[in-house]
Structure formats: structure tokens, C-alpha cells
Image 1 (tube, rainbow, N blue to C red):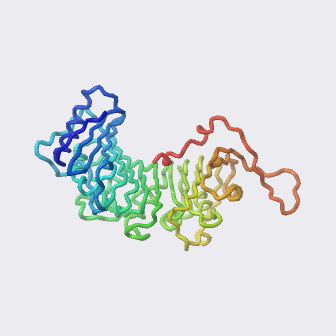
Image 2: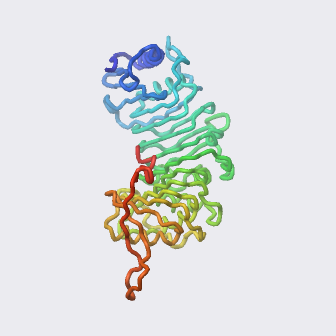
Image 3: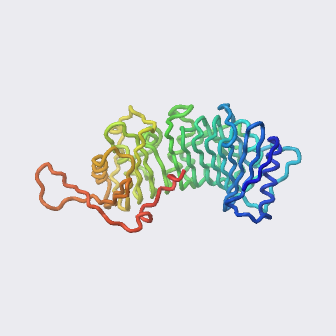
Length: 398
């Protein structure tokens, strides 16, 4: 049962900090302990603490303001202090912060609270109507940044060195601009793409399902992203993002995505499925072991792109691919055709897993066939521990 308190925005900050400071001395289950603070004539903040030092600040239960634009500055350098504001005790070591439905009314509170979390390693920002820009301070310890469904977001501003420390970047919504600064956040620079040669990024989700944002497809700072993700092990990518934003920045004969092992490829198929873009991308992924393909008819789609004119010419064959999981295809015939087309880049014979759990393997028929007969056929497979062989892609949990 959560505590319930009422007061002003300033009192809310004090109440949250006191709540966190008192938490280590209390002996209630961490998964059943929270604080509800009602403020500003209808606004509600719900605070919850999850195991492993995870703090949730959720404003979704209160009145939802009009989408007035605002910026969110997060980090230890924020100079926002309220009278008699306590400091956060080191006894409770917060590692992750989840922000849900922050608006212009609550943004100052959130900035103030974030300044009290010195060792924040993971930050998630979700469903913030009106959020226009995010600024991350230079002394941040951040390793994981996740931004979900903030549809008015235009830019993410971060210290130049922070981009090298991030191990995970996940974004769902519209494409955003990336701005980097050295000393003064008011002055940005866009370093050359080869500055990312020592990026530590291992996990990336580029789920830009809403299409281009404020800057269209000529996005300042985005040219660093293709270079940063070249060493990731786990990736979510929409077809149009690869075609329009990543492929033009890549050297088709370069090293490719040499460490990528798990790929979630999200496509739009208004007509019969075209695998040209997927096949081209797979030629850049020699270590791939699991491939997840989803057809999303509601995804943004660049209809005028001609993939045939920009195919990747590498002859890489995938030797390690164990499983291909298919979802959203119009019919079984399209799935069968894709499985045959994948043979172009495969040396292995992966299991083909349908959305209903049916497991098959595509094999070439050995016996003599009549002219015009398809030389491939599906053979159903019985697989124990299928979830171990092909678990849910990590980004599907959002």
C-alpha cells in the first residue's frame, strides 16, 4: 500500500527525497512500496522503488496538460534547489531512473530530483507529451539511455564524451537530432564520424516508426549513429532507417556490423514483401545467430526509395544463423518466398519459426523434379527448449 501525501511542487521534491532516505531503514517488500503525491490541483506523482536500485517517477495518473513544449535537463550540475531540500543519502544506491509522462509542470521537479542521483547508470524517458529536448550533463555516469514514445522530441543534447561511454541506446518514435558539446551546453559541435571508432555501444534500438522528425531526413549529428552501431551485439532496425539514413553513410565494402549477433528487423509491406533491403543488410552481419523479422503495416515507409540501385555488393555468407522468427506476414507463401531468398546469404540452415510457434527447416529436394517445380520444401521440426534456442528479442519487452 502506497503512502499518500498532498502539497506543492516544492514539497513534492522534499517528500520524495525523504521517502528515499527512509527506505533503507524500512522493512517492507521492495515490489510493494511506493509514494503517491498529489500537487498543483490535479497533478499526481507516483513514486515506486523496484529491486536493484530502480526508481520510477510516474506522472500519468494525474491530469494531462496540453502539449506545451518544454526541455528536460538531467544530471548532477542542475542548479535547482528548494528551501529546506534534503540531500539524498548514500545508503540507498540508485542505479536506474524511469520517467513516465513528465510535462512542463513537472519538468523542474524531475531535474531537481535527478541532480541528487550521483551514480545513475540507466535512464528511461517515456510518453512525455511536449518534450522537445533532452540535455544530459557532462559528469553523468550514464551507460544506458532509453527514450520511448516522446513524439514531439526534436533533439538529444549530451556532452561529447558521454557518447563514448554509452553501452546501450534505445529510441522509439521519431528520428531525433543529436547535439554534442564540450564545455558550454549552449555551443554545439558535430564531430566527424570517425571520432566514434572507440564507441562502447553494445546495444541499439533505432525504432523510428513515426518517420522523420523536425529536421526531416537531413538530421544534424545523425551521421555518427551508423558508425557508433557498427560494433553492437544487439540491434533493432527499421527498413526505412537503413535505406535512408544508414546505408548512405556506410562503405558497402567495409567491415560491416562484425559483432552483431541478434537483429530485429522491422519492415513495412504495403504490397508483396520485398527482401532486397534485408538481404543487403545481412551481407554486413557475418556473426549473426538470431534474426527476428516483423511486418508492421503501420510503420513509416519511404515509398520512393529504389533499393535495387544501392544494393550492398559484399558476398558474405552467414555461417552462424540458428533461427529466423517471422511475424506479421500476409500469408504463408510470402514466408516461404523469403526463406528461399535468404538462401542467397546463408551457409547454415536455420530453423524458421512462425508466429504460431510452428518450427520448420527449408531444405532442397534431392529427388528428380519436373521442370518448373520448386526445388525447396519445408520440413517440420520438433524442437525442445525452443525459448532457449530463440528467446524473445530483448527490445520486444518495451
